Length: 112
Length: 158
Length: 183
Image (cartoon, rainbow over all chains, first blue to last red; front, side, top):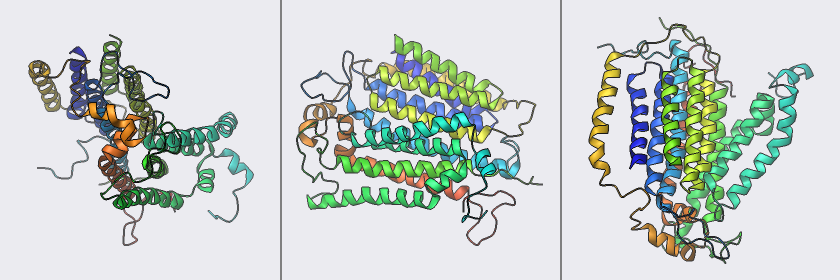
């Protein structure tokens, strides 16, 4: 139980970083931390006490294995997270090249 | 910059990092490349698979680029070839999926399964791993090239 | 027990990453969070996921350092927005308080329900011939998800290459002075 709770605390730290920070790079870092927390939750749900990695060994190895389905989903999610982080960094660099700052208060064009 | 002649020796020596880094890179970059292929090809027997192998292959080229500068990276793997390899990997993966129609449904495992724990076994899993590795590796390397060689000369907006 | 300690280390690293003023130190701290996460994956008996997380974290840190190095950053630190701080803290408090009864519904840590996965574990080797059961799930039982992932990666790479190019479609410069060195 405490493992799940700490995982959600990590997610809230990342979410706080996305909501409260003014620097674009800090917002991107908050998203990276939140994605790490979500992937961690999947792998935590898949764990089985006393079990081993889901790889069958030649010549008979342990047969009690952890759940392989969340591992496959998390593998995909990690690579997609890398792709979206790269796209966010590209957009942030373009914003810096255009405005000269990473401060989101100064890059607004629609002032209401 | 003219592409037909190599830049003079002084400029080649200043590009990239120091001599220590360049020597160590010459020793290790081949090993990293081989390790990436090992992880891809044995994806159905040991942990790993196409995604990690592709990322490690891209990291070997990133290592080369960071240590030797841009000209050496362009000589080893030009940007257009990287784009072609990525498209080739994606087409190969979809092609394997469509060939599953030979067995009846989309993505059916139609190649023979072989005996377990052998290198040539498990149906479409090894060719699909290789296709994914080409796609992910080439895609990540072109993203790296685009991000690192982007120049920040900006003009302040009024 | 070990997993708890490493999770607390990750939370401390994440808080340091968000609060420190120097951007390069923040990127290094996020790299630490990712590496400790890879260790946690290894302790939870997930070697595929651990290798992937390690490689992805290395490349994320390289790209983030590229975005933050050699910039003329303003010397005065930016003060966070008060509305944002209040919203973030209130949401976190409400979320965590309402989470505790919700966590009781989850299966206990260490005994998953395994409704579909028991079939994958029992018949994975016989159905697909692959010894790595995660690879058999990823590329045989659930290959359609992998096709979707390849599509998302392709779209993201096209997006990055389009955002960072120098010339627009009609041949004019996109913004004066920003040049993409690729030819």
